[in-house]
Amino acid sequence: MTSKQASMMQRKLLPIGIQTFGEIRRNNHYYVDKTYLAVKLAKEGKHYFLSRPRRFGKSLFLDTLKELFEGNEPLFVGLSAHQQWDWSVKYPVLRFSFGGENYRETQNLANTLDAQLKLLEGQYQLPPQVDSISGRFAHLIVKLHQQAGQPVVILIDEYDKPILDALLYPEVARANRDFLRGFYGNIKDYDAHIKFSFLTGVSKFSKVSLFSGLNNLYDLTLTPDYATICGYTDHDIDSVFAPELPGLERDVIREWYNGYHWQGEGVYNPFDILHLFKNRTFKSYWFETGTPTFLLDLLFQRQVPSLQLGEMISSSSMLSSFDVDDITTEALLFQTGYLTILKEENLGGQYFYTLGYPNREVYQSLNESLLSVLVKDKSKQAVQSLQLYRLLENNDFAGLKQLFHAFFASIPHHWYTNNDIQSYEGYYASVFYSYFASLGLKVTLEDITNLGRIDMTLKFNAQIYIFEFKVVEMAPEGKALQQIRDKAYADKYRGLRQPIHLLGVEFSKTSRNIVGFDVEQA
Image (cartoon, rainbow, N blue to C red; front, side):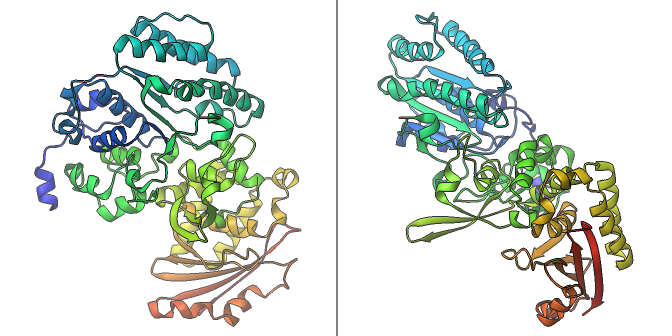
């Protein structure tokens, strides 16, 4: 489709912040048809689980399922499901959501469920016969089946939020987990009264820890047929949203927001896309809605250099679950959407995944956030980043040396007294790397498996910059630049016929700063 054809198409309303299927369909909003997947789920199975990052459309899909099972046919006219569904049958639906509360206090979970159960009991005119939360849920399931003559549909949104909210308070998290285990156990115990169940959340807690005997949940998270159940595909952008594309560079949209993979076709973050079309400006819309501070603190606590984040290795078992007392870094970053699957390998029957940044938004924003945890002074960080860009534009290497020295000097002393962070080799190079990455600059890490001898290549302004980092307590001074020469790192870039700059940077653990900065042109 040409840009002229796209501009002639009628523009619709952007469904920003709308998670209600009926409102989108009635009020002429853009809608990416996912109803064929809803019908496929209903016909092929019974109990499902889906993990996706926040603001990826899980709640909207859940609401689509609700309208489908309740038989609201007019909403589906013109959509894939319309000709595939028996609209003469209507099922009672019990929908729960944990999205609107903070669960750092144990009583909040019981209060939230009590309020939602009261609404459902009033809606179906089924007053409770028992006092317990779990017992009232069971009573609703059984009595609704009897009342309606059809088995019940159970939809649970953000099933894990009561645990995730309390991860920094392990006792509360465990209490919430144990409470939910009893509540969700009704889905197994009363299976005969249930037509369909669907649970969504950000994380996949292990079945042993949370779902107990609920081993009949089919996990859709890494199922290729459902890889696009949330998010927009390239085809969706080019067809459904075609009227919004004129004036925006298509390749730049892809670079900023595409790249999420769940073992199938890649998808765009819908939250970003809708805000881009409204504001017509490329920004980190999704990232800025809230990056959990515990995630950033955890990366430093576990001494995970930012250099590693672009390529981490995980097994399928690591990715598929975690618990309050056992959260792997890889699983947390993947399930929250900061890393995605770049490659899958089957080695001896065991699946291994290479994880990396999905797109420019996450690459740039996560590194900026990591720096802010270190520097603590966002104003100073912003000034330094701006200076870095301008110095690079002018190849002012003397200015770069002075600025890099200021980078490390701006890190508060208490960071070193409270952490042993300067003792692990990748720390110094990580600070360097994160400053470049936070500007969205194209950085390639040559050797990320040996943090004592990392090469970093920067492509900028039609020029190549090759960095070698050394810690002088671990290697003689003056050897960083020599290693670039000896190993002929520049040779692989000579074919580009661009200026190549070699930079040997040396650090001292004692002074916690740069002690050597040598530059030459290859």
